[in-house]
Length: 420
Image (tube, rainbow, N blue to C red; front, top):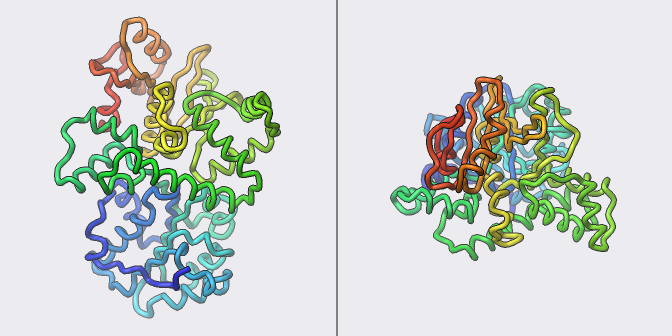
C-alpha cells in the first residue's frame, strides 16, 4: 500500500477530465448543506472522477485549495487508519482551522468503523463530506445506522449513450456523425468510462472490462461476503448474464445446476444474487401487476450493471441481442431516476414500466419490427393501457418512426438521446 496523501486538486490535474454535468448538477445544490453526500454505484463507473470534478469546481468558486481534501482509501495506507478512532483523528487533522473543509472520501468503507468516525466528525467540526462506495450496504445497515436522515444518495452509472458521444468528442475532437455506427460501438463496448478514453479495439476493451469484472467479484462480493465457493458464484453470475432479459428464479437456477450434475440449494443462490446486487453487478427487476397495482411474487428479470460485462465474460452472441437491448434501456431509465418494473396486465407483458415523481412511462423493446404482424404483437400490450402516460416502442428498425394508437415508435439510438 502507498502512504496516505491528499490527492492534488488543482486545475492542471483535473482539466483533462470529461465533465459529467448531469451528476454535478444533481450534487451541487447539496454542497454546503448539513447532509453527507453519498455516491454509490458499480466499480469503475466514474465516482472517483466526480470527486475530482467537484474539487475542481469548489476551488474555481473560491474555496482555498487547503480546504478541499481528497482521499482515496484504496491507496491510503490502512496502517494509519486501522479503526474508527484512528480514522477520526486522521481526518480531524485534515480539517482547516479557517472556514469549512470539504472532505471528499473515495471508497472510505475500506476502513472498519468508518461510519462512526464520519458521524462524529460531521457533528463536531465545520466539514462538508462527500463519500463514494462500490457497495449498496453504504445505504443500509452501515451508514443509515449512524446518520439516519442526515445523508443524501446519488447512484453513479457507467456512461449513457449520450455521454459516450461526449467522450468521443473529447477524444477525437469532433462528435460522431453516424449515430447507428456510434450506437453499435456502444452496444459492443459498453459504458465504463475508461473504455471511452482511448481508441481500443474490441479485444482490448474486453480485457479491461474483464479486469473490472474480476475486481468486482473479488473486492465487492467475495471478500465482503466471505464467500468460499467462488466457482459456484461465478457460475451463478454467468447464468444471469446468459439470461439477461429472461424471467427466472433462484429455484430455476438451482434446478438448472442440478441438471448439470452440480448441486446448490436455492437459499445459497438467493444469497449469491443478493451479494451480486449489493456490488451493483446485477439488479433484480420485479413484476408489477398494472391492474391490481401490486408487485407480483413470480419470476423476476435480472440485468447487469453494464452490458459490456456480458460481452466480455461470455463473448458476443447474436442470440442475446434482445436481452442486451433491454439492458441498455433499463439502465437508461435508472439513470434518469425511474424506479423500473416489468409490467404485467392479464396475460400480456410490457418490458418496462418506469415510475418517477408520480409519473409513468411505458417502454417496449424489440430488436427489429420487420412486418405488420410483429408490429401488432409489440403494440398490443401498450394499446390496452388506460392512462395518459407516454408509451414507446423502441427498436433497431431503420424505418422506426411515427405514432400508432398513441404509441411512439422510435429508433433506439434516438430514444436514448431524446427527452422523456
